[in-house]
Image (tube, rainbow, N blue to C red; front, side, top):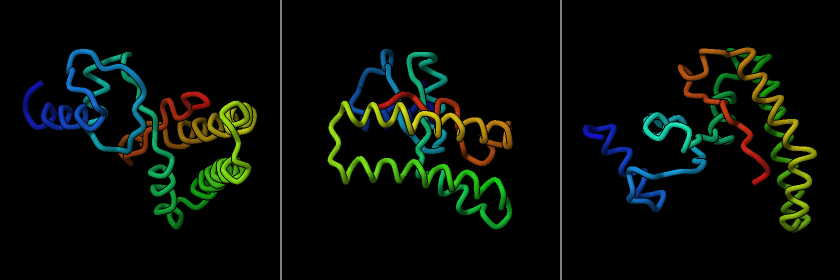
Length: 140
């Protein structure tokens, strides 16, 4: 890939610890930076993008005065997810407990969040720099 998008993609690959432009697989947690979408388009199903919850939260925090109802719902769901993670940190939970709690408590919240984003925003997600596809990739 050439041009500015190719250069951005090569920079991201170096940051991710890979110099192999032809064979990159995995899940990349990211913000709305367009180079990530360029990478995803290039690698197809080998690369999945996972939305960064902090970036999603910021977008809705900034929109809380204009999109009051939806922002309140989204911010409340994210706050609940943050509380779960705080509780796990405070309990010094090991990997097995973290996976169990995330599967039981976090996964349903991520699914609700993803559904809300698609239901209320649809095609406007990308225009706002918010991507919810694949918001919840598992318990990792």
